[in-house]
Amino acid sequence: MGALTQLVRFGWNQALSCLFPVVIFASLALTQIIPLPLLTRYDWLLVICLLMQVLMLRTGLETRDELKVITVFHIIGLALELFKVHMGSWTYPEEGYSKIFGVPLYSGFMYASVASYLCQAWRRLKVDLVKWPPYLVVVPLAAAIYLNFFLHHFWIDIRWVLSGLVLIVFWRAWVTYEVGVIRYRMPLALSFVLIGFFIWVAENIATFFGAWEYPNQTEAWNLVHLGKVSSWLLLVIVSFLIVAMLKQFKGKTLQKG
Image (cartoon, rainbow, N blue to C red; front, side, top):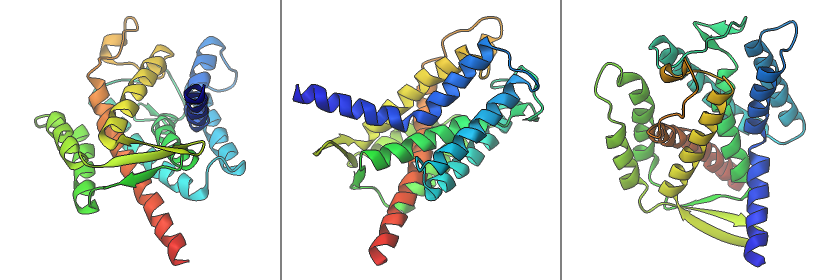
């Protein structure tokens, strides 16, 4: 019963941390089933995401510092979307007033929701990092990961090389977290894989509800290729680094204060 109680507590904290992504999925489903008046579907999704962001800030579910991190990742994600849609990796086939170069502005919130989850889970589970590698190693690795999403269209795709480097760099690193009064730990590389896998699951849900389309989904919906897990795993590392830098900087600032 003790183990079951801990599992329920852990699941509840995870559910609360996933509030923003859940709202996005619910909005995708709602706007696909029920046509809303006045605006297009993509525009309504943008309005809902903006209102949700304001609500989370006003209610204290997110702090101002966390909003800064989420905004940074929103910009990073939107830049990636603009490039990938231009290269034909996926499309947003519906019309919308809030589309720029074929990309609806709500799409940035899908990336921001990942950062929102990381920020909230970090705070709720009192996450701590053990044997975190030096930033002189981690920052260039994260930059190389992000750039590879762009450069592999013109050069070779080195994602598997980068994945191997991730294992090497984070091999000794652990993440510890608290459930109730008990602390647990997990290899950091494993946490990247798990988060990447669940984002892949979320991606299948999102494409099923028409958030965007891959080329093989234009005629009928198909399962997103499992190889996309590696892409999400690498993108999670970029967002994790941004959140980790915020948390460590904030911790040092509080200690000095």
